[in-house]
Image 1 (cartoon, rainbow, N blue to C red):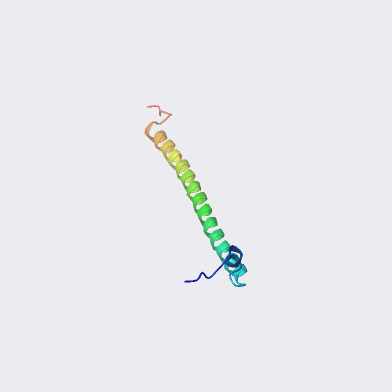
Image 2: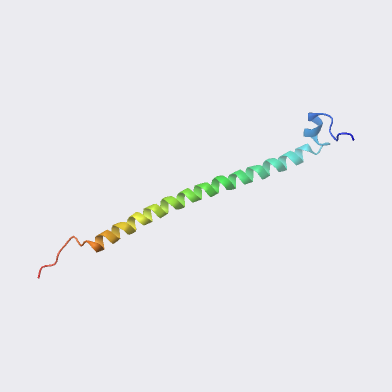
Length: 73
C-alpha cells in the first residue's frame, strides 16, 4: 500500500487542485459559522423582545387589577 501524498505540501497542492478544494472548504466553513452566529443573534434578540413583551403584559395586568383612580358615587 502506497500513500497518495508523500508530503504535506503535496497534500495541500492536491495535484494542482488545491486552490479549488481548499477554497471550497473555506467557503463552506465560513457559511456554516455565519449561520451559527446569525442564529444565535436572532435567538438573543427574540428572547429580549419576549422579555420586554412579558414585562409590558405584566404592567397592563397590574393596572387593570388595581385601578389607581376611584370613581365617586
